[in-house]
Amino acid sequence: MFPIGDQNEQGRGLAYVTLAFIAINVAVFVLFQLGNEAFTYAFSAVPFEITTGEDLVRPQPVDVGGERLLIPQEPGPEPIYLTLLTSMFMHGGIAHIGGNMLFLFIFGDNVEHRMGPILFAGFYLLAGLVASLAQILVDPNSVVPTLGASGAISGVLGAYLVMFPGNRVTVFLFRFLTAVPAIVAIGMWAVFQFLNGYGQLFASQETTGGVAYMAHIGGFVAGVVVGLLFRGAGSGRARPQPAF
Image (cartoon, rainbow, N blue to C red; front, side, top):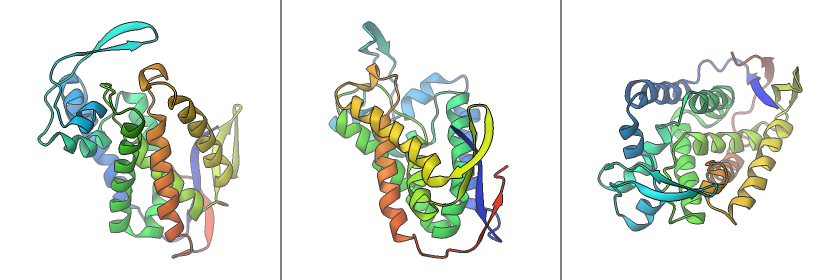
């Protein structure tokens, strides 16, 4: 099931903060990350660095699928805790940023319109921070860099779920285009994250495909909690409209 659009609230106009976050993420990826691996490693969040306050500057050995690998490290910003913020705007490749920005584009506008632009901006950053801390909590000694907007966007999904559970989300399902309620589309995504996150409790990120599932869960839970505060605010009639 892959979403490509949703049911938008009528007469709300552009979601400027959502579009700004998309623009910032794309700009960072194109202008600073492409062809500059050192930049990516320097500004990604490394759990070990956050828990110890030590900035790793030399390659660190890790076991991935029974194979010993060296993870590059680069000097980061001072204080190193700033990477909790900078890592939200970093991505590991075109597919990574493309998928994240599509989800943000589809689901961010309704949440922004319900919260208002300033509160939405703060909420997005807060969800990303909670997501990073959740991942660090379960794997505090990991030297694998964590990066991406996935945690913050998971927060957006959590808020959307409780604010607009009945909104229709257009998805590709078994090669067919159909519309399902948000509670189904996002609910299935959430179940997948929780199942994999449970497995990650008994393994490291290195052995679970490199995906920070606990970050997704942390951001999602933060989004649900904050979304409940805005559930009845500013609701209006909605009309099915494609998100592209």
